[in-house]
Amino acid sequence: MSDRPQGLSDPEYAAFAWGRFRAIMAWMILAAAICVAGVIVILAHFYGPLHLVTMLAVIGGVGGSVMLAGLLMGLIFLSSGSGHDEDVERID
Image 1 (cartoon, rainbow, N blue to C red):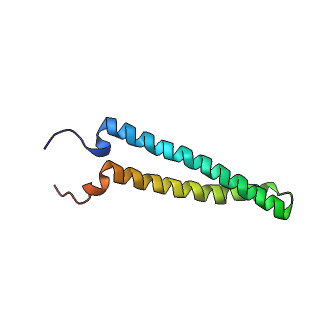
Image 2 (image 1 turned 60 degrees about the vertical axis):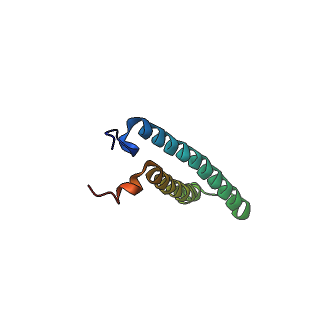
Image 3 (image 1 turned 45 degrees about the vertical axis):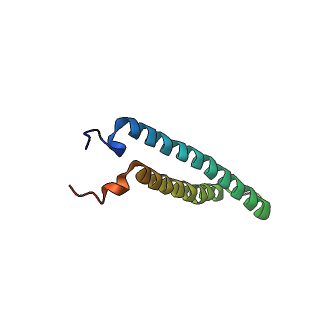
């Protein structure tokens, strides 16, 4: 057994894994912005000009939901890809 740290304990792999997580989050920001813009356009089409409060609610609701889903999905990928899921079964 080597003394080299594994998973996120290894600084090089941690930098790679967190970089991949940040890339996933950057794409999710873009996806959230597209979803928010689409919902605002659709609502404006059906209901006419929207109030600022309505647009803020759409940004918070739709954008927040998409970002939360992306965050949780990214953390699952980070945990699975770094070996933390297997560490749970390892008893020292």
